[in-house]
Length: 330
Image 1 (spheres, rainbow, N blue to C red):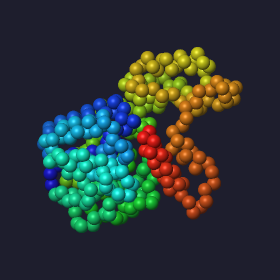
Image 2: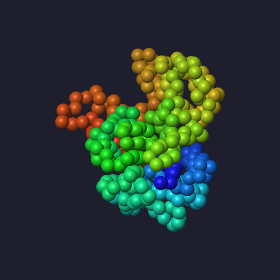
Image 3: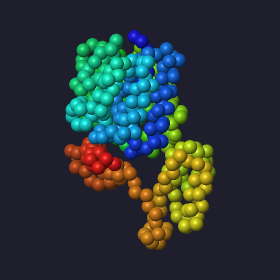
Image 4: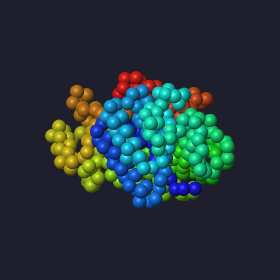
């Protein structure tokens, strides 16, 4: 079969439609188009979650998306519907990807669709067991890492996919391969959970995958206040973790030193500073932990009934949080 370029989990509109990420995604697809042209590849497949916000599209993000469609006008493009591309959790329709149906070169995959030797299936679709050599989808498969804290345990077993020579999926942002199954991971680092994990896109050549890192993306860097190596600060997104309280002047000096190194964005974390160190809660500046991290830490410290799995409880709580965020458009 013909070579294809594969990419997944773009999450266009992420970080509240911030212009930094809009520009980054523009550059990603300009690079993809250039590489595909130079490598004589005429087909591009996006394996789900082109968009980030399930409930609404920002005008800037919508405009950017149409610009990307124009960038890809010389290629045959398949866009698999992911869970972030649908308004409802358990239904493909309506999908934000319908804005691309007016482009003759773009096919939105809302039902199992075969192209050459590949069966493509969207989010929440039954696995089409009609014989195909390869399967592309937006899947949840047991034993694969969902994030840094949890492994998927309550969806498809890998044995379901043994009939395929190769399965390639979007959805889980951590790249991983076991047996004949590969999760591509997100196209670029998107949160501090992506520290030290290269991301990019792939060339698929009759079952073989060649990874191409998208090096223009800023890195997420966690920097301790007493680290001497600050070489990764400039141009990247940095979380500065204070290991102790150095006093108001000392804290400010460290902060100013890092700011002078020109990070793209700088966040501070004072959560390691105890009340005993400072003497008064009134004087402590505390960064609120990511709420999902807090839930994970809490569930690991409390007694959970044996018949309940921490991963399932956390997953349900995460879904509730995401629903609240979407309803408030945050």
